[in-house]
Amino acid sequence: MLDLGRVILRLEKARRELLATDPGDKEKLLAASRKLDELIVEYYRAKLGPKMAGSAAGR
Image (cartoon, rainbow, N blue to C red; front, side, top):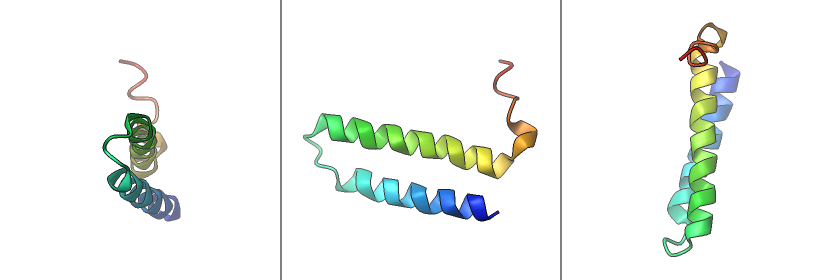
């Protein structure tokens, strides 16, 4: 559960960084968006745990 809390904090920080990024700077926007995407995946892995870790791989 502690890992889930840490991931949520990192997600919120990345979200704030994305919102603070200059809309005209496409490279920074893309980098911030990719980081947020990675953290969302990490969040779901932490939330669902090992029972769901391999379910998407079989598709």
